[in-house]
Image (cartoon, rainbow, N blue to C red; front, side, top):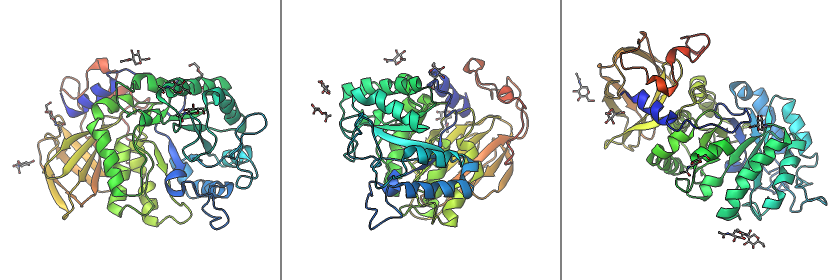
Length: 437
Ligand SMILES: *[C@@H]1O[C@H](CO)[C@@H](O)[C@H](O)[C@H]1NC(C)=O
Ligand SMILES: *[C@@H]1O[C@H](CO)[C@@H](O)[C@H](O)[C@H]1NC(C)=O
Ligand SMILES: *[C@@H]1O[C@H](CO)[C@@H](O)[C@H](O)[C@H]1NC(C)=O
Ligand SMILES: *[C@@H]1O[C@H](CO)[C@@H](O)[C@H](O)[C@H]1NC(C)=O
Ligand SMILES: *[C@@H]1O[C@H](CO)[C@@H](O)[C@H](O)[C@H]1NC(C)=O
Ligand SMILES: *[C@@H]1O[C@H](CO)[C@@H](O)[C@H](O)[C@H]1NC(C)=O
């Protein structure tokens, strides 16, 4: 069996169904405040960067005016520290009156007028991680109704200050409460991250029926070490995690750091490439007002985004982990295409990695590749012909690969028909390449 079939088989073996709210059939994209802005509430000394309606309106303007929204970055997500320290007289959450004087419905309106969607943050437990009022079990329905009335489009429900039993009750309860509001609200659950992220403690079949996305592991920090720590945990556990993902249900390795301080340009491309083949939600956490052209080019790379947003929604896998420090990742895509990411963990010099598509278990035939970051087109790739990619230290080479000659059935290319995947019928228009080619 070839590599694509193996990834498909693993992806569909659980035949999992997703939360039935019609949302996030491809990984959600947008901007989330936490990694860059944390719990900065000092608007006196830092008015431009504190958690306030000004920050979110600034970012909304940038998302709408600088091309982000049109590429799919539509969610603008508030994180912790937005609320008042007290609920209102009717027990409802309310925003901090100094920092959000116009209120949340006004912010939602501002975003909706610009074709954007508002995400908000709450915490299942006594307190949020930052010490603000939590959503205890008795408050779940109130908070769901409040968010729906405000026009919120997505909720991240964190899990500080609650125990295992409360989480097992509260996360499904919030899912039902959101549904009962009648407003489609994307639902991000931090539940697995508080319970070790792995079966048997986490039942990913069940989780996918409750949540649209979930944080499985540690918070990301602004460093390459943090990216690698998260990547390694996800890959070492890919047999458990990869089949959990699919349309409407996504693993979330946390935010993109591109445009911040901790990653070099090569490392920034690496994170964008890896998050794209892993079908990860793409939430930036940076300052869109001062973003460098280089960071923008990486985050706005149309082919990387198209790979991330591929409608089949199959999460990629690490298929090779070599002693040389080279790792290869593969994601099957619609139209019989696939994406390969060659990552170098080396720290010496650009590495010449020689391989062939056959070595990567592609079946016979002729392929073409597009280098995602240079735009170079590599023609005449046959499965048995060696090629060499030159990979910078801590960098990647990322390819979009597609067959140039039709591979008929019976050649071992198509996955088993019982896997519900037929390369010829996954699009009403047949075998047409996406318009970025
Ligand atoms: C609520 O759930 C039902 C049944 O799963 C589904 O048909 C409906 O679209 C959901 N509504 C919302 C707002 O999520
Ligand atoms: C939440 O608060 C209750 C009541 O004060 C307390 O008994 C419980 O231990 C707290 N739970 C956590 C996880 O902090
Ligand atoms: C979890 O907290 C609740 C109180 O909110 C308590 O009744 C229960 O015993 C706790 N469970 C565990 C496993 O600690
Ligand atoms: C996981 O949840 C699904 C759906 O609720 C259920 O059918 C299955 O039996 C559960 N698996 C385990 C190992 O508990
Ligand atoms: C192709 O590359 C492999 C290493 O992947 C090497 O062992 C083999 O000798 C190469 N073949 C040719 C014809 O260069
Ligand atoms: C290719 O397939 C073989 C046999 O199934 C497997 O052992 C190997 O790990 C696969 N290699 C890749 C790169 O997928």
